[in-house]
Image (cartoon, rainbow, N blue to C red; front, side):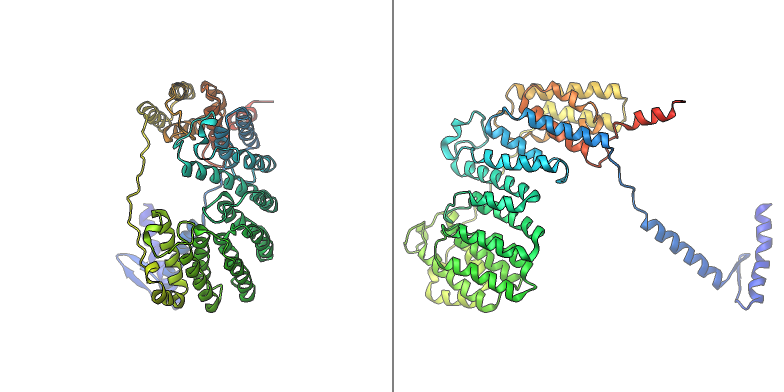
Length: 475
């Protein structure tokens, strides 16, 4: 009946539009008008636009949840105080990257300074036996030195987030390798320079140049890190050109070793690509790189065109530097083709990179899947509590038996397991982790759990149920 009434009314509406001068079309008992069509179209567009604008509401993190996460991090740090150097470095690195940088900023700044000093205590080369904690790849000097440099660079970079000037001062205290290899200061400079420029802008360029020139007196100028400065200065042609010329003067002194020369070639390529320097400066820099490469052969003044004088790694560095010269300073490269064809003929045989696939622990993998299924099925809290306790016992047994004695960080299965445990029950994870007896693994997993609890993720608010209960109770 209601439908019939609507159909009877519709022609009347059409006549009203016709009387006011609007054209009318009747199709299958329906009246269509251009004005009505426009109204419907606009209405639909508005509805579609409003839906597109709708954004998901951010998940709030309660103050109690934040405090819980902070306490977890502090407890993890306290557990790590008595650990051997290598384990302590791994734990503190994890803590510095736990939660957002602004969370616990004052404490993280102190921890970054502390890590900077501790990381320098890591053994070099064959000194691994002096450290009580075993390490993967122990006994190989390049790997040990690289791990040490990375830890120092990490500490300096995290400190720069809170105090970039102090981070530069700490880098001043590091010894230089004279450009013979990529040392800790060179690695750290790339990160610290970037953060410093973010904080100070173009005005910070001269400060970074002054520090770099001090380091360059012994062949340790951070050339590739300076590309960040040129990128910021490129809108001011004079400032960018002046900065690069100062760096070039330092390079022409010839204090850099092979690694330093290749580092400068990397800077040249970036500067030219950014169009931050003139063509004349690029050609002059390219010429100087080729001159120094010809003088260098395995750290001695031998004929650099003799391919037998270079190791495979050194050949790779030279080939990379030559490529950067070719694309940035074509005139200098063309001149070298005539005067030093042997140098430009260097080739590197491609060696297949060996990738070590970590072994998967069948027990932990099974526990991980079991816990994931329980979360998807939304099982009750008591069952989840028991399941998590059972799985964490597996983790404890795995590490107690020495299954990962050579690990410097938890394997993927354990990581995922504890992350899911924190995801499911943020209030009980600290208690659950007491089932792991080894202090390093307990502290490391506690840091992972704090990350889950203290971030605006899907982790349940541990205070929500209590608040709702209090609000529901009658006064």
